[in-house]
Image 1 (cartoon, rainbow, N blue to C red):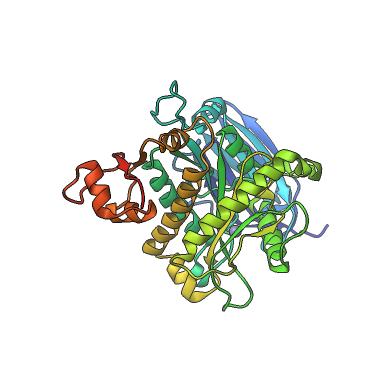
Image 2: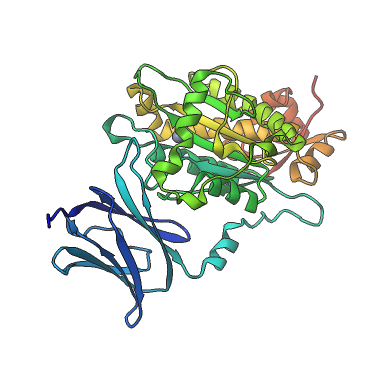
Length: 426
Ligand SMILES: [Zn+2]
């Protein structure tokens, strides 16, 4: 009998809010069994005819229920891997077929046993705005693309899309956090993968008013550059490039690791729903606003909002846009995208686009709707982070002097959350 052991080429570990994912890179597919044991609590994987190439050290076990990982040879050719556990977990394992970017993989997900608690905490507490007075916050779901097993597009010097877009997402969150009337929710807030469908589910659970997916583009030609904004298309894509991009973004589940049974089963039929048409109109209009803000400081790849069948944008009732912040495959743009100041500008532009759009189209029952309703007898504006008096004056088409006079201000000092009366414009 020829001995031809499968090789475990690498082992990676990612911690998500509700589970720990362990990924084995394999030289070929293997047969394996898992076994849960108590006293002490541990999980065993036996792999038939397999051997480990590297030691199981340097796995980031912090904040995971795994105390230790060890391995041993069994029955001559078989491999046993043992996870010593500090807490109860619900294990799920599944193999992944090779794709363009990776070979055979075996995924082991250890779900935390106290998942119910975590689910509750994922739903954001609405800010302390007076609920009884019908002034709720507008909830913005921020979706940093890719994560964990899925690095997204790759730039020079091993710059990963997943890292850049998480940084921009976190900066956007910080701005929204300080904006009265807006409440951010992070769809992913660390280096782990969430399925495309899971991202939409999280947005729905958070009762999001808007879903913003943040990405960075890549293309064969390094010269391709510029930012763009996308909305869903219920028919074809608005260009072949948009189609190409949507196909690539939609393949994230293959790279990130999603079980066959978890695959998206949403029917195309739901997209013809009337509510979808209204949602799409909002997505396009809001997307155009965000694109205009980005165009204020960055080069644009396309001057209008493009459309294609992005799976992550397929919520029938939540307006959803996807921002490609630039081409990470372009060395100059990759440098910019990797800089904190450029990430800041991008976050600021997206924030500004969202805020100004909702200021003019606030959903009923929100603080912004209440503010807008008060505009007839003198408009009000609540100061957000980064605002300056002169900017507020320009935005409301009033002079700086009249703005100061109306509010009895002598200097230019303002504070976040301060309410300004906006004088009647000329
Ligand atoms: Zn992407």
